[in-house]
Amino acid sequence: MEQAAQRYHCCATCQHFEVIKEAAKKTTYHCQRLGYQTQPSYQFNCWSPKATVAAKIERERKKNEADGPERT
Image (cartoon, rainbow, N blue to C red):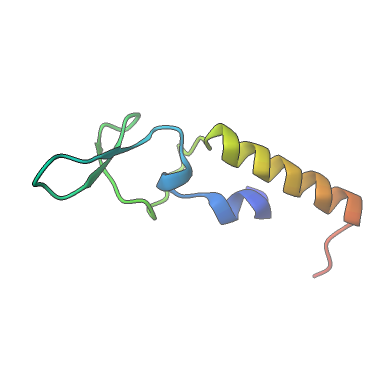
């Protein structure tokens, strides 16, 4: 996974992440793909970024390509 995507890789930025708020109950987080509760900061290999996150990653990738190779 490239560096830009690594920064955003977490459940909260995944298209399958769902926030469930019920009256008088604690907020829960659920993965529609995996079918169980999760947390916004968790990371799984099945991650599919939301469209807005994917666009931001692509913009950063293009900017990095225009700036030249990364220095290590």
